[in-house]
Structures are given as C-alpha cells and as structure tokens.
Length: 413
Image 1 (cartoon, one colour):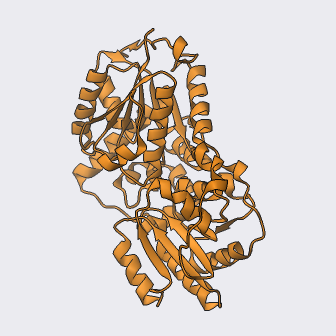
Image 2 (cartoon, one colour):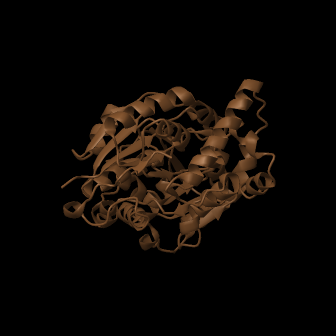
Image 3 (tube, one colour):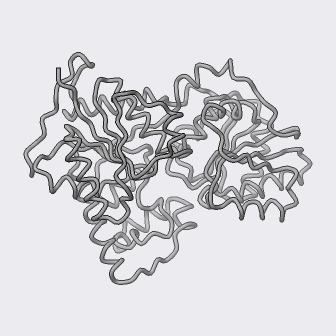
C-alpha cells in the first residue's frame, strides 16, 4: 500500500491564538487520520503550542523561514517541496510563493488553496492598488463597514507598486488555475470572484466535537465580582475594535447595570486599550486576562453572561466556540460568522460603534433565549466536506487508509 504524500504550506507562524492556525492543525490531523502522510511546512512555530496540540506521528512539521519577501520565500518553499515530493499540495497564505515554487519543479501535483480572507481584509495594504482600477473594487469595499474604516490611501514608491502589481497578477493566475479553492464565508467568496476571477467553494470552519459533547461537564468559574460579565477572546489588535467594546461596557454601566468585562488575549493594542480603560474610569471593571490556554477556554465561555465580538473579521471561530458553550453572543455587522449565527437565538448583530454595542449587550444580558448549539459546525464536518469535494474532483483518492492510492502528479505544464 502506498500512502498519499500531502504537503500543507502555511504562511503564518504556528502559534496561538489565531483561527487560521487552528484550521491548519485540524486539517493536518484529519488528513493523517485518513491515512495520508502530511508534511506541515511553516515559517516558524511556538514549541509550547505545538506540544499542546499534540499532532499525530503521520504529521511532520518543517520550518522554511519567512516567506514575506516573495522570491526568497518561493525558493525556501521550493526546497521543502523538493524534499517532501508531495502527491498533493495544500496552501494557506502562500498561494503566490507556492505557485512560483511549483512552476520551477519537474512535476505539477494537484494544488488546493484555502483563502482565509481576500486582500481587502488586510488594512493599509499596497496590494489594494492593482484592484482599484476595476469597478468591482469600490462595490466590494462599500459592502463591508470595516473595509472603509481600516483602509487608507497607501502611496508606495514605484518599486513597491511594481512589486504588488506583479504579485497580485500571480495570485489571480494561481487561484484560477489551482485544482480547488476553499474559503469560509460567502463574503470572502464574493471578493475572490470579483478581485481574481476565482471560483471558490465555501466550507465552514468549526469547533471541536469534544468541546460540544462535554458541555454539561464543564466547571464554571468566577470571572469578575460583578452581577454580569461580558467576555472577549481575541488578539488585542485594532481590527478587533475592543476599544468600542470597552466604551460600550462603560455606557451600560452608566445605565445602572453592574457589568464587568474580561479581555482574553495578547497583542500590540494592549497599551492603548489600558489607556482607554483608565480614561473611562473602568479600571475596576475591565480585567486583562492575557493568553488563555485552549483547554481552559470552555470554562471561560460558560462562565460569562455574554460573549462579544465587535471585530472586523472575515469569519470568527471564538464566537462559534462561545455559542457552542451555550453563551449568548454579540457580533459586529462585519464579523462574517454572522452568516451562520446572525439569525440564531441569543445572538445580536450590532453596528461597529459603542452606542449600538451598548444596546446589543443590554439585550444579550436580558435575553431569555437559549443558544442553539446545533447551529455550530464542527471540525469533523468541515474536514469531511472539504475532503468529499477533493475526492469528487479527483484531487484525493477515494476510500479509507486501506484503500489509499497515490495521486499521480501531472506532467509540468
């Protein structure tokens, strides 16, 4: 029996707490469980995090270094691909570099891209410039509040402009020619079609089934000494709009509600957020919890009266986790997990401003609705759906481990 060799090329550091990192790990774990040999190539990784997630023996993690300088990144990825000699290549955040690397190799294995967010979800980015000449750009940007809020007017030099023009053209060609393109939301799929002419399939990332199944056994804890507690779990990043949440909690307190806020996560925006808390006189009511291990998160979710996600976000796993733990959830109008949860019981969708969020939080604290955990997709469902589509397209072999056949690499185009 010959096992299929799969190389998953990831463009971000493998470290907590991001959703993209979780998706890649779940994908690698699933493919290994299906009997494939998986090489997970990353720029770098956090040793403690990798130890915590405990990947199976069939997954080999290799480090290739920083891919952000495009051609050097492509050379590093090429070395990984030559050594791994994969039958199939999966990419995350490395479409161009991996595409260039594969173009220089003698074989052309099937490729699968998972796009976590189009270029429009990256703020102040010169890569927007090649798309601004097309009418679809303005339409796409106007449809999402954060696309205006976080986009300025980048003015790169001639060399940088030429670089992004070339690499965006490469990305469009790669996405049009790859064997399958996946993304997590209809919003991102619309943007990939409009910007690159890609034809993506929407498959919804999810939550661990074991989390959902152990809900009754999770022990709650006291998060604050307030009557009500609002919880956030995310990077402390300006795109998460946690300053809006801090102000909203202050407004709810001004209305006479005894509410506290717990912010779980780390990031560059922490100092600014602490200043906002101090300026609002909320030092005794906002708690900075720092990084919380995944194993501890269920207790945080179940112990909160409401979970708040005011972020500009192309999807959002933390709201799904909280909702799966039966906690009422608030979402921003540009948090696109709203495509799943927006009309669910005990969910409120608010405009990205403090007044709207104060109203949403009060509504969540008073809701008598019961969250419907069946609305939450699981990682098993996500991976199975993606796998079935790849089998249907002939990218992966049909059957379980005992039936695995090698995928024959196509001659180089």
